[in-house]
Amino acid sequence: MLHEFTDHAALAFFALFPILNPPAMAPIFLDMTDSLSDEDRHRLARLIGKYTFMLLFSVMLAGGWLLKIFGISVPVIRIAGGLLLFNTAWQMLNNKPKFSQDEHEELKRHMTDRAFFPMTMPVTAGPGSIAVTLTLVPAGSLLASGTWVKFAGDAAGIALAALSVFLFYRYSENLLRRMGRAGAQTISKISAFILLAIGVQIIWDGLRGLLKLS
Image (cartoon, rainbow, N blue to C red; front, top):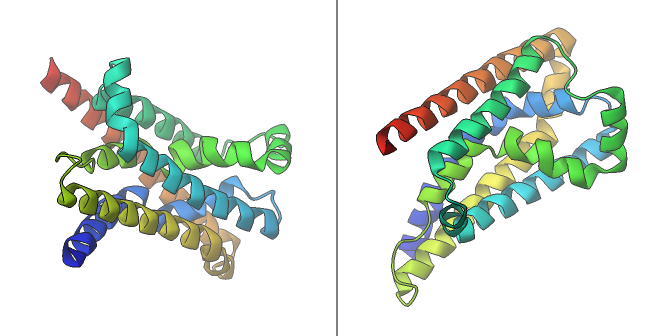
């Protein structure tokens, strides 16, 4: 049973980590929070890690049922979230401010609200990670012990993925600052381009999914 638990946890983690991609998203997080103090940024990183786990765990717990209730398909979720990611990345590539000065002040005053949207969803845990999490939903009987082992293992994998988000958001700033402003901006632009590509890929995957359903 322990072996099955670790297998499910590892599978969930390695399925989510490339989608969440904390190494590439950390520069974007730092760029979007450049007006915050170090203490506020560290607190925000903790909140984003916490909300990432809560969001993905909730999706695994009830996401499939909710989609059926509202008649929303996974491809539609992919397209909508991909458009949000595309818009964020496009603004970053064109040197447009991610937040206005008023929004920065609101972020300081209402950090908890901003920590979930847009910092956690869709920037950190977007439609890609949500779609992957939906595939982790146990399909067996609730009375079977294997179903609960898989559920616990998947939850542990989600927790590890969320922890990796916090660690990269919290500690990568030291490395980026050593690279200097030019180096940090270069990494930020590359990361924004990767985010743009991810957004396009998610939209394309959603369109292909809709074509298969039609």
